[in-house]
Image (tube, rainbow, N blue to C red; front, side, top):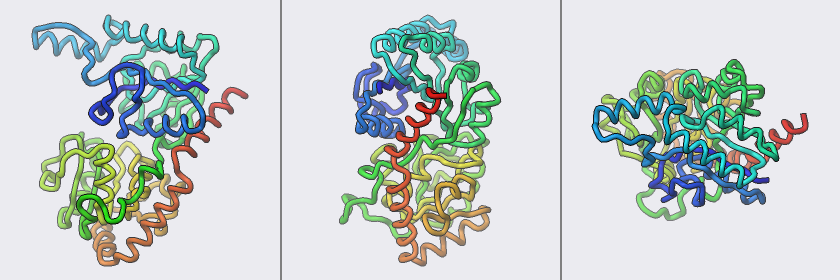
Length: 367
């Protein structure tokens, strides 16, 4: 099959990708890079259309105050922005030329208009329109994303609560299928002996986002309880003042993997907006051979066996004691880490995700 991804380029420094729809595809820091790799390995043809990129200029004005005003209006009302309308026409042109069987609209869309999606669905052959997201639409989605909910043939969500929100917005089909998984060739422990610093026996690692605080309050509170340990925080965003002493800077792609590999324990509190659970680190930390400690949530019990593949905590008051106990038991730590790695390498690979993803598409087409 031919699959066209419609996405924003978030980390161009990770790949050197241009703003065109030509390869190279996604930066390795974006999960869909592994989607493409798995799909192409299965014999499918993929292409990506960058709907927007950090360096892309969607308005032209020279006065700073006016530039800010125009930028704000352009972001809020892309249908009134000439550059945005041009980008929509370019997408139609690419889609007509490529003749995709599946269109995958990656979440965070602030540019591709509902009327463009309607036109895409009228192409011959008629492609299946899939929307993928890792965040709740009521909190994160742009107005035009929510307005298009009824046009998506299928919404693939990370969290059950997110899937329920999309159904309330009018999506005809919404399922929970984690966007993230592992690629055993990438998500694995460091080679022995490792290149660079070895795993720190006392280091407690966290890789992820901590701002804004109202969306990550539980995560911040959990990390604050670990400030008495050798806590290492890697984030591409700001870090709250209470945790800045532990900030090690950004970690994307290979650096993210290295941050996991060099931690004795990886803690993974989910964001407040993911009560069901299933973020990227849930699978990646285990794939890297880490002992993961994650907040207790339904997704963990669905996809893992706690105390065998990873450890869970129910309140932040429990967390320091669990960490202290595991630091004192390196053999037990290693046993659980190896079991977690074996589990995700056997049951949660990107190829397995893509087999299920294409199965969902087949079910839609046959219904």
